[in-house]
Amino acid sequence: MRNFQEALSKNPLRTKTDLEEALVDLVTPVYECMAQQGTPGRVHLGNSGAVYTQEKSDIEGFLRTLWGLGPLFSQEEACLRYPKLFQQANAGIVAGTTPTSQEYWGKLHDYDQLFVEMGALASYLIFTKPVFWDRLTPREQTNLFDWLNQINQHTIPKTNWLFFRILVNTFFEMAALPFVETTLLADQEEIERYYLADGWYFDGYENQIDYYIPFGMQYYGLLYSVLTCRSQCLYQFSYRQRATTFAHSFKQWFTKTGAALPFGRSLTYRFAQSSFFAVGAFADIEYEGFTKNEGKYLLLQNMRYWFRQPIFTQEGFLSIGYAYPNLNMAEGYNAPGSPYWAFKNFCVLAIPADAEFWTLEEQVPTFATQVRNPHSRMLLVHNQEGTELQAFTAGQHSHEHAHGNAKYEKFVYSTTFGFSVPKATVLLKQGAYDNTLAISEGQTDFKTAFGYEAFAIEDDYVYSRWRPYDQVVIETFVIPMYPWHLRYHRIQTDRRLQLVNGSFAAPADGAALSSKEGTFYQSSVGCVGIKTFPTYQEGTLLMPEPNTNLLYSRTVIPQVSKTVLAGQQEWLVACLGNAFSDQIPPFDVTITADKITMSQGDQRKTIQLNY
Image (cartoon, rainbow, N blue to C red; front, side, top):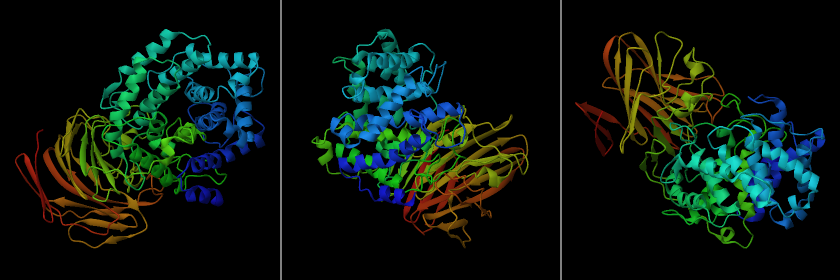
C-alpha cells in the first residue's frame, strides 16, 4: 500500500495522462480483487455493514467504479490502452444484468439502494454506447434494459435520486428504447421545486444544505445537459445557467491548499468535494465572476490534497472515513465500496485531449475574508493567506443521519481543525464537544443543539435559539474576528444546568501554553484556545476518545464549564483557532445593552445585535 499511496501522492495531476494514470491506479486494486474472487459485477472490499445487504454493498463497489471508467472509455483509444479493465467492466455489467447468471443483480424493491448505482451505469452506457452497447447481442441489450427499467416501476425518494431515473431514461431515449416521457418531465419538475437562488438548491429537505448540492444537484444537472440527445430542452438551459452563478459562491468552501470544508454528511466521498468543477469543465461552462482557470485549480488541488492523506487500506482500496480510515464518523449507507463515488471527478477524462481545458493555466482563486451565504446558512471566514476556512452556521438540520447534530449544528467548522463526532454522550471525553455548547442536568448525559426554533445569518454574526429542555431557552450570538470568535449566550432556565463550551480540536502532538488569559494548546497545525469574560474562568484541555475528529485520530479540545441556576444568565466566551500559527493575539470584549465591541490589537469592531 505504501508504494501505491506514494505513486498517487507524487502524481502532479497536470495533464490528461496524469488523470488517467490516477484513475487506473485507483481502480486496479478493486478489479484485481474482483478477478481473484471470480465475481464479475460485484466485489467484496470489506466486512463492515450498511443499511442494505452485503450483496448490494458488493454490487455497489463495482458499479461506482463506472463513474470514472465511463468517461475514460468514451474514447476508443483508451479501450485499446486498457483492454483488461474495459473487458472486466463490460463483463461485470453483462453478468449483473443476465437473470441466469450467478452474479445477477436481482429484482429490486421500492427505495432500493441499487437505484442509486443506476446513475453510474446509465452514464457509462451513454459514454461508451458505440464501443459497448452497440456491440451487445439483442438478448444482452434486452437484459440490460429490463434490469434498468425497474427504476421506472418502483418508488424512489424525492431527492437527488430523481436524477438517477432521469439518467436512465436519458439513456433509453438515446438508445431508442421505450420510456415514459412524462416520468422524465415530472422528475425534472419536482427538482425545480428544490431550487433556491444563485445556483443553490436543497436536496429534498429544506434545512439540509451540504455537498449534495455541488456533487448532487449541480453535478447531475450539468451531466444531463451534455449527455441528453435533446437539442432543445428548457431544463438543459436552466442547469447550465445555474452553474454559471453557483461557482462564485461555492469556491468559498475551499482554501488555496486544496482542503475543502468538512461539513455535513457523505464526507467519505472525499475528493467528490470538487466534482462540480470537473463536470463544469466537461460541460464547458462559462462562469460569472469566476474563471475556468480557477475551476481547474480547485479541482486538481483538491485531488492533490486528498492523495496526500492516508485514506487507503493496506490493499489499496479507498477506506470509509475522512482524513484517515474511520467507521465512527460514517453514515449507515457507507459500505466498503461507497467511497468510489469520488470517481465522479474523472468525468474530465471525456474531454478530448486537444480541448482548451488541458492547456489552461491553473489560477488560485481569491477568497473573501468574510462573506455571508444565506442559501447554505453560513458566514464564511478565510484567513488572509487563504489557507484556512472557518464556516459559522445556524439553521442547518439533518433529521435522520448519524451524528446529524455534530455534522450540521456546531457553531463553526474548520478546514484545518476539522470537527468531531461523538462515540457516546455520557461523558465529555466520549462526546468530543468541540465548537459547540454541551448541556446536562448533572455531570453526565450531555446534549447539544439538534434543531433550532429560530436562526439568522447576518453579515457580521450568526444567531440561533433552541430549547434543550422544557422551560429552558438558549440564544447564542457567534461573532467572528479571525483568528478569534466570540460566543454570547443568553440563557433562560427554570433549573440548574451544567454548561460546557468547547473550542477547536487540535491534533494531540503539541503542548499546553501557560497563560493567565485563558486555556491554550499549541499543535503542529496551529494554536487553539478558550477564554471567558468579564472574569477569568479556568478551563481544561480535554483529550477525547480517539477517532472522534475527522482530521486527526487523537486530539485535544480546550473547554470551559459553567453551572447556572434558575433564572436569566449570560455567558461570554471567546475561542481561538489560529491555523498554522503559534500566536495568541490579544482579544477583549465589552457589552452594553444590545451592542458588543470586540478588539484585537489595533482592530476594533462594534456589532449591533438585532435579536
